[in-house]
Each structure stands twice: as C-alpha cells, then as structure tokens.
Amino acid sequence: MAVTENSGDPKSRFDADIKRWELGFSEIEAIRKRGNDTHIAFRNYSVAFSQLALRSAFLMNGGAMFAGLAFLGALSRASDDNTYLTGFIVACACFVVGIIAAAAAALSAYLNYESHSLREQYETKRDALSKSVSHFPDLYVDQQQAVDADNSNWNAEIIKHEKIIIDTQKWAVGFGVTSFILFMIGCVVVGGTMATA
Image 1 (spheres, rainbow, N blue to C red):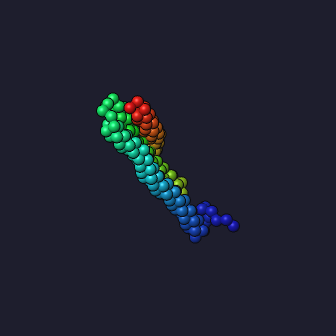
Image 2 (cartoon, helix red, strand yellow; image 1 turned 135 degrees about the vertical axis):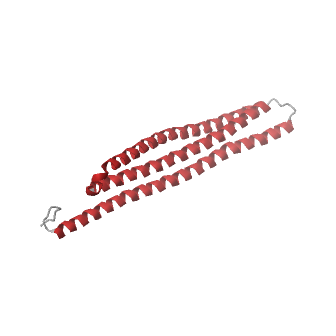
Image 3 (cartoon, rainbow, N blue to C red; image 1 turned 60 degrees about the horizontal axis):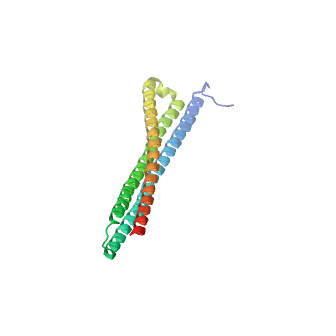
C-alpha cells in the first residue's frame, strides 16, 4: 500500500514529510550547484578571453607600431627627404588607436562574461526559491508577498543583465573588428609610404 500525505497514521505522514523534504533539499541543492558551476565557468571565461584578446591586440598593433618606427629610422638615415614622415605618423596613429580599440574589446568581453555570471546568480536564487516554495508551501504561507517581491527584483536584475550581455557582445565585436581594420589600414599606409619613399 502506497503511503500518501493524507494517511491517518502519524508515522506514515512523518515519513512522507521527511521524504518530501529530502527530495526538496536535494533539488534545491542541485539548482544551486548548477548556478555556482556556471558562475565559476563564466568568470574563468571572462579572465581567459580578456587576457587572450589583450595579448593578441597588443602584439599585433604594438609590434606593427614598433616595426614602423624602425623602418622610419632606417629610411630617415637613408634619405634626406622627409615626405614619408606623414605616412608613418598616420600608420602609427592607426596602430595606437587599434591598441585602444583592442583594449575596449577586451573590456567589453570581460563585462559580458561578468554579466553572464551575475545573471546566473540571480537565476539560481530565483529557481532555488521557486523550488523551495513548491516543496515547502507551508513555510511560505505568511511570506508570499516577500517571495513575490524577491522574484520580481531578481527577474528585473536578470532582464537588466541580459540587456548588458547583448550590448557588451556588440561592443566587443565592434571594437575587435575596429582594431583589426585599423591594423590593416596602418599596414597599407606603411606599405604605400615605403613604396613611394
């Protein structure tokens, strides 16, 4: 015979309540663990991506800038004509702005992953509270307004961070593409300047 919560036997009701509580706590703990694991993963992604993006952008644009300066020094010693100086200044300006754009892309990516992490925290809190309320409704009878207020606040934070995620994703891609385009423009300017020098 199956034991239900409405059984007349107090021991059976107690055992059923214990099983229901154990199930509820295990489901709530699973939600919290998933949220914490995802939070940690996004935090690690933000750090790794930011380091990689900054390193690549600085190597690409910074290396090109210093190589351009070396060519400028060699050309200035080889010729008294300084008409190529403007081209190298423009190219170096492109490389410097490319470095700044790459740093902005890395910052945008960092903010994106941080927003992912924060959104996940709020979703975890909301989901854990929802599970807790569904498993233990007796505990929340007098606190329904507080539960609704918490859910409303957490949902507002989730929506806010989703907007930040979308915006920072656009910024990261835009700044990254800008950095690459500036690198290419700088290379073309250097090549054109060297060809005419």
